[in-house]
Image (cartoon, rainbow, N blue to C red; front, side, top):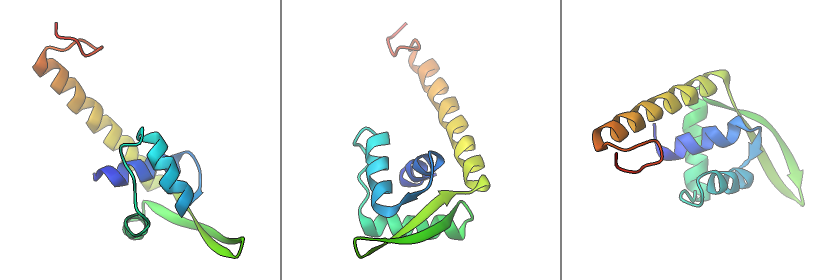
Length: 107
């Protein structure tokens, strides 16, 4: 799974968001490591919608501007959960290989 996909799904797992709120939520959740640009976000959302992982959740006009809202689907939550499991397994393998304790210090 792409990093941007992971962070978008994680943000949407917290509740429905519109585009600019998603950009900020992803930045916050990733500790400022992922900064999505508007075209990148909407391309990802279109792809995720085609794949059935997110769905449109209404529109509203605020201060004369259209806000499109999105939500994660059940399939999207399942894919995110599987990715978290994969990441945890990879992390455990890396810790074991490097001889690291749970706090990241060499054993």
